[in-house]
Amino acid sequence: MDSGTLHRGKSNQEKLIFVYNANSGIRNGVMDSLHKIWSPKTYDCNLCNVTFGVFSEKKAWKDFRKKAARELEFLHKDEFQKQYASKFGYAFQYPIILVASKGGMEVLVAKDRLDAIENPEELIQLLQSRMGL
Image (cartoon, rainbow, N blue to C red):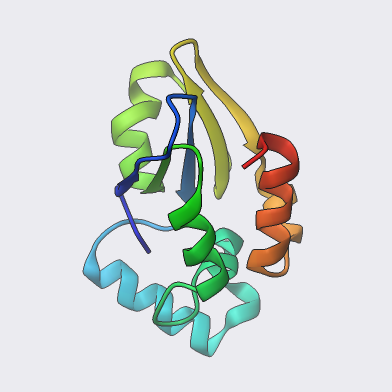
């Protein structure tokens, strides 16, 4: 997963923060990939499943991400908690997609909605409808 990478959009609007329900690090990444292979139905990060295959980012998602008109930030839950949650007292269920602005953060797509998404195209359509991306 593209953790911590900031993708600069074409505008100065709020940024979207995508928080995976996984921890950072090579060991965790390998374990997540193995979990996806051996027991995909029990893997608990549907944002990971929708945007990444076992070994690489899905093409439709990668193309969308590269063309996004807003700034996008991708974090694992431990990175998010270290960078944001402890400062502002945020407590969320992961995975989650947030809108961050100078005034704080708002939930754009909560865990329950992310868990119902089946493919990158469905996620892209949802983001486009809610944010005009």
